[in-house]
Length: 92
Image 1 (spheres, rainbow, N blue to C red):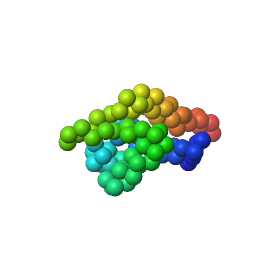
Image 2: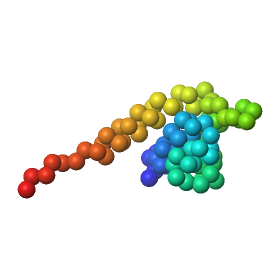
Image 3: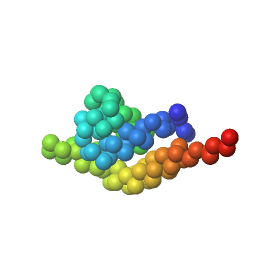
């Protein structure tokens, strides 16, 4: 689903990537292939016009913009989860 030209599915990928700071581990967490996670990172980088995860030796570090996105993305996903858990009561 797109919202203001942004694929909302990428929020889940962004959360995993920023948390894991590793494309392979993020892919495992998302139950997708490493190439799909790498592709998601590429689309996120393009959208935000920022590297988000920057190679630093053998590791990835989160960019300044990535750091500012961590909590708002998590809060958005928590709110979406809470909304989806709302179910009307059954009244026979």
